[in-house]
Length: 226
Image 1 (cartoon, rainbow, N blue to C red):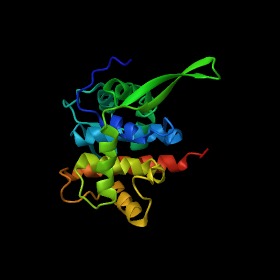
Image 2: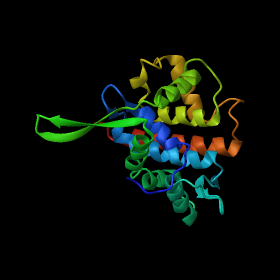
Image 3: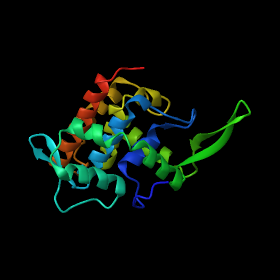
């Protein structure tokens, strides 16, 4: 298990990974593009916490003297404190190691459970199933309210919905979030930083988050599909 410091409040990368977890199959949706959106979630979390600046000609940099206390976020902050980085460079550096630690946290919190199984009656393996906290259902309900019911989101929910859209996995949520033209349009608005008046986030935070999300989309689109 990871020994990095982490707070009681889940990070955005944990929330996103929990949403992408598919209880029916025990798998994570969008595995082949996962590290880009998880990296995007970390950068968006830094922006929402005012730990990140995007004022240097579209390059991201850490706000000096204002590191986040969470270990996963701190690693990204330290990386961007060295010098300003392009968003796609940051995503490629920050994203790949995130899946394991984020999943460990979800298991430790009880949001996802591990279930030992045998394959062919011989080989031991571990399956994932939904935990009993109900947090995934609450997150999904928040996103549904924004995308389906037209509720103006809080900034964190707006970023989460935008990243979920960026992952390209929204069609897989059709049972809970109908894949309709209005939903697609609203998701694209969120990707662009159009969060509505109730999303209490400063313009720079929206701009940085929108830049991160759209850079993730560009990177994901360029990847070969399996």
